[in-house]
Amino acid sequence: MRIRFLVTALLLALALTLSSCAGILSVIEDRLPPPHEVKGGFSFNYYAPSARQVTLAGNFNNWGGTEGGGRYDPVIDPMSDPDGDGIWNIVMPLPPGRYQYKFVIDGGLRWEQDPNNPDVAYEGGFENSVVLVPPSISYDSERVTGTTISGESAALPEAAAPAPATETARESTADAIEVSFELDMPDAREVFVAGAFNGWDANTDPMVLGDDGLWRATLEIKPGTYEYKFVVDGTWIEDPLNPEFVEDPYGGKNSILTVE
Picture 1 (tube, rainbow, N blue to C red):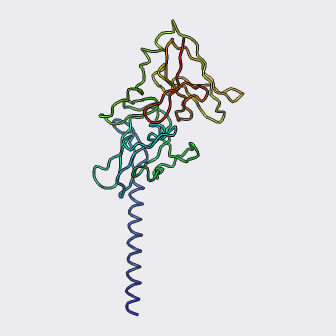
Picture 2: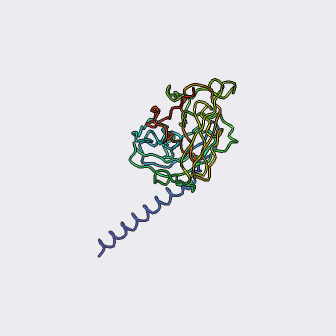
Picture 3: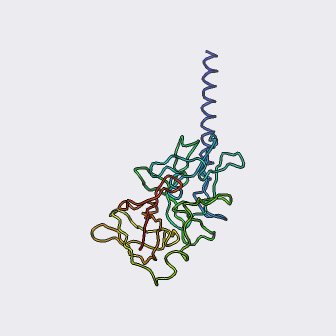
């Protein structure tokens, strides 16, 4: 009888301990802020005390290299836990826009939404966390074919570096030619066209939805060859009607436009 009592007491104590630990973990998670602006960019935080590695993946970095059938690359936007307290962090110099993201744990073993961010959206049949970066940001943002590179040591991939708008197609319209873009996505809320001809700016050239469900835009672009993509509700995609493309550095594709 005494042994049974001791076993019961030990099990009860263990249950209380586990419950207390779970409560502590919950409190820590609840204290973490959702993505917010800090010096140098937007800060993302995730509590994973047992993780060996955590990275940030979203439509700003081609979902860690997996977009378009590519393989997950753990060196893209790794998070750090400098204090060893299980709180992983990364600061991303995201340009203004609406982005979907997840946290990737231990080389792709788990892809998790942000438990501290109630805003969600869907892409490819998956529910993801969403962050809105307003136009009022006070830091200098970086854009590379829809991919944000974070950290001072991050080198811009040669194939992805956007051509300066002042040197490509938009500084002068003297030799410019009208080019029409078209995209069949009637359920989208907003669509932009971005490429080397506008400095890869995701907010400069909006497309207009017609009664036929097609998004259209007509731009004046100087003769030359340019890479471009459509930005659909914050997601960067290649032109499905254009068979000409090049691989980008993260497993996706950039469509090719030749203006003659």
